Length: 612
Image (tube, rainbow, N blue to C red; front, side, top):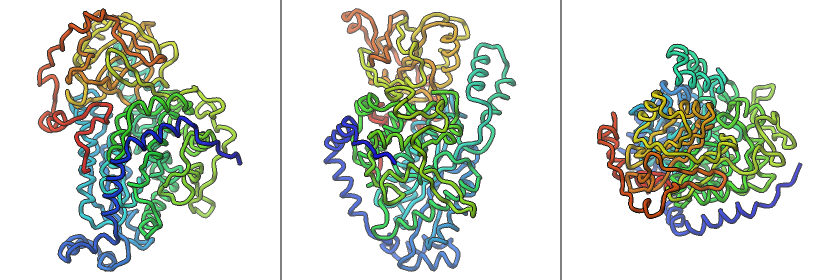
């Protein structure tokens, strides 16, 4: 067994810097947790309040909740059967109740949170509510836990804004032991490469809607998470490497004996964590070390750029201040260890079969790139148990086997730190006279990472599509899409721009995207400077760009500039904003809450310091 290397000096320095800048806020947060302690919680309630809490329970559960010792576990669920990733959760509450009873507790569904599918709303008006929904989910989680009757929590959620929202809401009740329970990815269907090819053929008008729908239906074909490495699966990586999942739990397929055994184990584990001194509450697990581990995992696996928004927002909910410099400095020393679509051809099922999270975590530990001394929901041993893969023995009992660390199960999918796919992580921070943004480099070939070309400016993704269909973009071009920030229209993902821009790139043109909006976690291939801040609606310099200006995006140098005479640049005013109807769709009344209170992208774009 190899001995882990000492903690990398850059990882140590970034962690210390985060802790120092967060000292007062974190201390205030922990003091609040301390004052909220004491178990069992329900016996602080009045008799009428307590009677309401167990009125609908069966006789045995009711008797248990009247007593002094048996723990009460709250389930916060994001179940709906429109989301393929969340459909398996339909049967989880019944499973969990039985497992918790067997472990000596009582479980109740404390509440449900909304769970929209970005795959359904992508490119349409509903996407304007997507980022906003994260804060609604955080508030809904807080509402569920505000009953003050629970001793532990199980959170059922997987996708895009849902897991970050559940974490933020749970951190407001950070004195409670909390475990995140995944449901796993759907089995592999049509390859991601073939799906992308069908989309590009459709964008070019070479196949019709029926052919495209057939390809999409073969790709998204069963219960479970979409199998590409987008935001949903990056969420699962994040929960595992931060110690909020059971080891190796992220990518086991739904409705399998192993998946059910892991759900049973999570339910039993949270009961055990409620005993005095037997478990660490979520507010203490999520500290600066765990958050740095999360960023390292994001970089090492080439995860979703959406987490440059979500991780700072999660950190803020725990009294910790993160910024993009922390991501950038860590990216310089964290190697890229995974090639999962859009960073490669494999899907998450192949990633898991090749060693998955246990292998990646083991590699990062041995290279001194992770804090091993963190608290986790697993219990003793810090992060070391997360080097192990779950399996069922011959008798059907759940066991864990330490993953091999000497070689990958598939070197085309998972690499070692000694021979990584790239020496640096998959994200870069860009700075220049156009503002600050981020770019996902892991999916972009090196020859496409520097683009200097004339700008073409748009105020909506629909306008880009129209120009593409008219042949107006068949040239070297940097497409600028403005008024897409959190204060303008909720920062919808612009993933539908990937196929047409990919077509242009495949024709041999130099192409890039620059926007104050977001791209999907599944986006790649075309270089995209996203989350550009300050956003145009707030007076950001991206609003000074005019058609024909020469822009330069250099992902290697980390720069983003308009090559315009300084005096001319400074003299330009802001463009007129798009009309209200162009800015908003079906959720405009709700959206006004978000628009009027959203922070800058770099802060996580949260509406408020929720529930703090």
